[in-house]
Image (cartoon, rainbow, N blue to C red; front, side, top):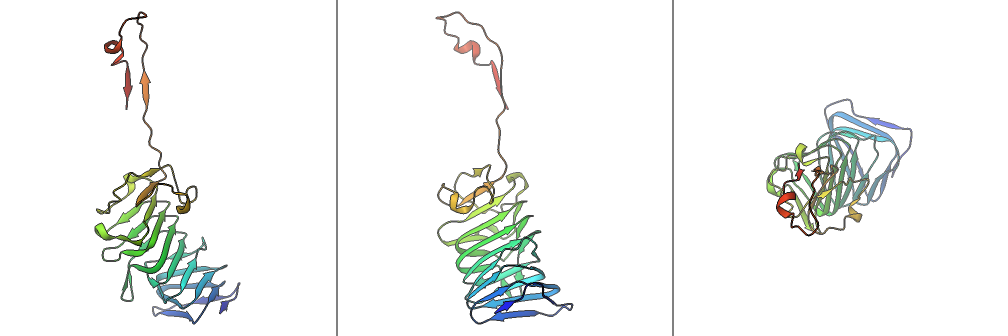
Length: 231
C-alpha cells in the first residue's frame, strides 16, 4: 500500500482517523488529524519516505515495524504496541495514553527522537529491545523508576543537560556520557556498556594557578599546596 506523494488526508473532526495495512505500507502524503486520534496499523513494514504527519494523538498498533522519521512530523501524545518502532518528531514528544493504550511497547527495538523536550507521562512506560530516547531539549520522566525498560540489551537516553532534566528515579547505575548528541554519537557508536544517560553538555573544571618560587632541592610541597584554585 502506498499513499502517494503530494496527496493529503485530513481529519477535521474529533473522531479517529484510522489507516491500516495488511502487509507493507509506505506513506508519502501529508496526513493530519489535529483534534482527533490518528491510528496507524500494519502487519508488515510501515514506512514514511515523504510528506508529514500531524496528529493531536497518535496510536500505532500491529505486529509490523514502523519507521516515521520525517523532520516535519508534529505529533501530540503517542502510544504504541508494535513489533518495532522508529519515530522522529520535529517538535516536542510526549509518551502517554491514547485510546486505552498506555506508553510504548515493542517486541523489537524502539527509537524515539525529538528536536524538543521528551516527556513520559505517569503510567505510560517505554518497553522494548534496546530502547533509545533522544531529545534535543530536556528529558522529563513522570513515570518513575520503571519508565524505560530494556527487555534485552540496554537503554540510552539523550538530552541537553542534566540540570534541565527530570529523572524521576530512573537510575542508569552507570556514569553518564558527556558531550554527545544523537547526531554526533548515535546509539551504535556508544562504546560504554549498560544503561546510559548521554548529555550534549560538556562539563568543565576551571583551574587557576599562581606563581611560586622555590630553591632547587627544597621540598616545596607545603608551599605550593595552595597556589591554585579549582572551581
